[in-house]
Length: 331
Ligand SMILES: NC(=O)C1=CN([C@@H]2O[C@H](COP(=O)(O)OP(=O)(O)OC[C@H]3O[C@@H](n4cnc5c(N)ncnc54)[C@H](O)[C@@H]3O)[C@@H](O)[C@H]2O)C=CC1
Ligand SMILES: O=C([O-])CC(=O)C(=O)O
Image 1 (cartoon, helix red, strand yellow):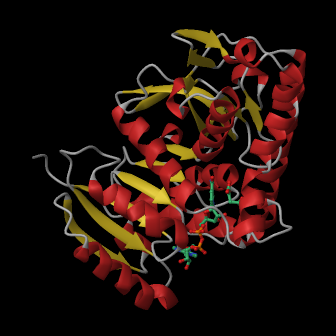
Image 2 (cartoon, rainbow, N blue to C red):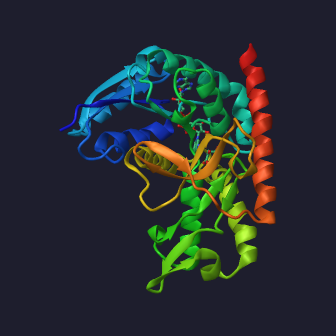
């Protein structure tokens, strides 16, 4: 058995963590041969609740769980971690956009970037889940200059999973038969869910999804808006934001980053190098492949005029969010 790796989950007393911790501790993320030492960070008033979570983790009797450290101190939480799930942040309520959380949440990611910079492993892989996720990831990386920017990512995997599931339902196939759907841009209502390059196993063969669905209008309208608005739809129904599906997506994202995405593209918010004419130096969601712990943007895709407009719109929003976040972090 390998030596345990240290993994931190922030917001560990919250909703998403409640589902995520089991997945990490049971081997679903780092594999069935990799023990984990869990560092659980939350704020001081939540330490009592967190104690209950620690008890439940013990009661799960998980063979891969090498130890648990609950703490309210970021420098203790981030010490020597190989993977960081940055979940802890305020969630939105009905009627809010995710960027309305910026002024409340972005300072958390400045402080946590500084702590990661001081005490985490320099090869730590950071996944920002807390909203607005892309811009928080940008700020976190900015305040951790000793760690490569490529090691910071934002979660758009939940959007990808939603998109894949919508297409599979429309086509009447199991969800794993659909692959290579892309989420471009921001984890916000301007994101562009793009099925134009996706393929489906159907009727004993493989087909492009647009040909199999044969309804361009659906792919350009209902499909896009359903995925863009799915988070809001869950909030309207549950009065709380997605948690089970968010935890599953966070596990998928980190697993693929560590263990590889195989022959599938996955969407991750990563630092933009200007690929596909997007603004540089923002955290933008691209189709990537992952292997050996590194991601690589899928190259050479054709961008239609319809897609161009969508890619530009979500990029513009990210440039604006970045400026707002930098203003908040000045004081
Ligand atoms: N990127 C994505 O696809 C998704 C992102 N989210 C976002 O994830 C975040 C967490 O959501 P939930 O778990 O449902 O919220 P929650 O309110 O249930 O839990 C958040 C936890 O974070 C803790 N926290 C607050 N400030 C902290 C700090 N400075 N350090 C450590 N912990 C801190 C809180 O005390 C609380 O226990 C929200 O911002 C939500 O909008 C949610 C779903 C999907
Ligand atoms: O919608 C929200 O506020 C929570 C979230 O990010 C999602 O479910 O995609």
